[in-house]
Image (cartoon, rainbow, N blue to C red; front, side, top):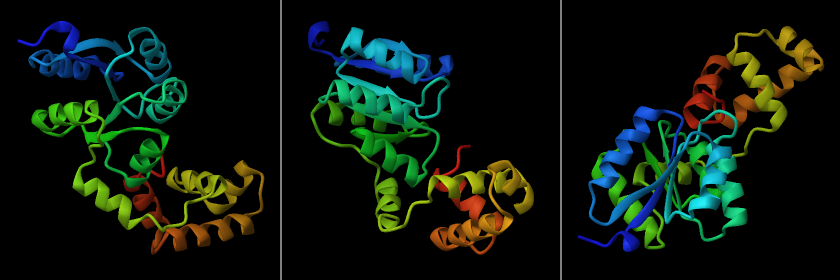
Length: 210
């Protein structure tokens, strides 16, 4: 068996204790890996990283207090060689792209087989990237797309919540005509046929929070 000091030390960041326990069980069952520690949100992840200096960090994206993408960016700013693998429920290309731009070296879904998770840890520890083909294809397909502006996302979030154009306009402090203009732009950028279709696409791709 590999000596403790040469094992891959893994930090697990997720707000669900059952999932953390499950990952810990899988990792500790490997002769070349060990759990360095755990964190329950992005802010805690940064503190734990500073203290533990793990070899590989498994990072959830949607967590309370600070999300995973912001935590990745801050950890990488402070520790440029940090190796971080996103482990998330969502396959949206926008979320994946933002996480990779923030400095993640890998991206996995929580539904992935344990063998793929272990492979990703080893691959990223070796200094390479690990992105499943399906997610890489999604990112490539939308690479040239125009991103929604912050205001367009504000409008679409209100549409997703069932607001009319008038109510959305009142909440945002803009005219109803401006909301309509934003919606026209949103439909064009997302290649959506109507408001409902735009919300569906934006949620699937990770543009809107779930």
